[in-house]
Image (cartoon, rainbow, N blue to C red; front, top):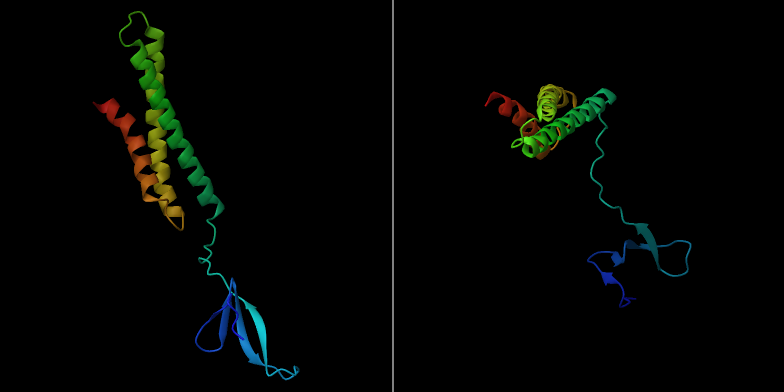
Length: 146
């Protein structure tokens, strides 16, 4: 009864591939034993309920404000590095100041939205994302102070 492609387990089970076969006695069959196939259930992680729409909206707004802070601060640094040694570039320095001011405003908004995200979401965002967002938000503020 044992075929080379099957593995016999103790008790009344036969394993083959992804199915489990159970030996049972059959009343309708002339043979004393019959093999009945039962599909093996895959273990799935428990399904978490989705966050509410306001929580999702605040999370998206938070990530957009962090991204805007990063872009404004990076553009301000790049333009400042390009024009720092040249004289007569008052318009470019005005753009640098405007971008730096914009990055400070969006940094404050993103820090405020971070508090809302941590309060509204069922499961907080990954810690690495939170730490990176806080560092991105603090850098323009620290640059303005020093």
